[in-house]
Image (cartoon, rainbow, N blue to C red; front, top):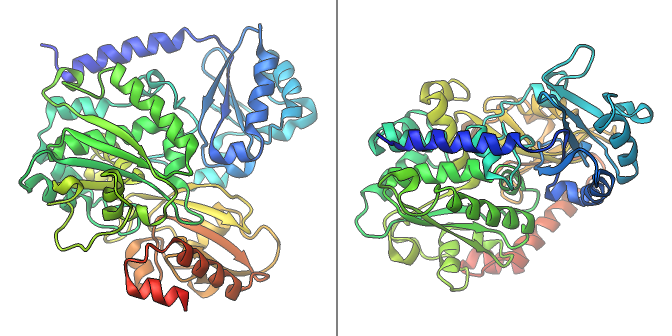
Length: 489
């Protein structure tokens, strides 16, 4: 009998064969919004010229979170050994190609510090866990970021992508999936931290057809960028979670809504959706099952307000992205006045992790309410800027000093600004606050979507607050009097 799991096994075997046919060494440039900003595009172009007519192939992976070392390049040698290099400016490409890609040197002789890590570890060479920035993380949803090639669904499948979807369609009922997500205590990762299982159950029980799924990737708030990095690096991990949620709720259609500024994430998702349809992972009778699902990609026009759920639904419907008066929950009457479930990118990406490892394993990490991991985006006056996935419950002090290396300027810390414009700053005396929604709330803070701007004592808080007020004033949708009038005053 050809079950979805059997079909998936066939799909994975074929994907692995296609991947094995690629020429080695394979040179992978870490292409992301952050990398392109510091010259990754120029590095990629120089590599394309240097590798032309050579016995090597060129590809792309996304950012692995070490933005402070970009541009980055990974070289995969025969046998699967991966050498990852940082600070690979375009003028360093000839030495990298001659000595490391085509030669046997682990790092260019003139730039030995370029080598970040070797995987699997080799005697005398740095491995990933030698870096505090890596070792202290709890990489669940980001585990394939920087490894999987986001424009190649075969790479995702060969690494186990979509297996939990196949398992769900073969072995699990929607009740069992919902119970697993509930026992895992998965909270929304978009800021509101609403229990995902409760939201799914409301949409599942609501009357009306069709039922819609929405993935919120608008992400228009200052200093928040983790969702687009996930989409740039591992779009299929997000799609798999969305599909499992859709199967659980009983939905057969949905929308992936990406902010208008996130052009690279949009382009990668266009390719990801096309390839998922080609492999039978989207569309009718997915993996030969009775479950069908169609996903459309929508792009915003740069409106911060459109990140609010009801405003996003208005935008998808073709109207101005304005919030609605919420007399009825969107899970009961949302998009096109039909039952709608909306989660953000990181939330959906957690779903395959929970099914793979189990709710009990997932819930071992975290606080009383906040379980699992959280992606944070350190920026500002910090030594190791980028994005990290930390275990919930880690102290803010450990995050700042041990994981991120502390203040980059050598000056005293003034504060951290979490959650974009949505929270008050974190002063020095609150740094021992555990990173959970409940502990931050108790301290009068907001964890939100995970921004963490580090500010030294040269920062003028008055100027910072003025900047945030100006942002609110410009981006206000003017629906609410308190926002419209107060910001103007």
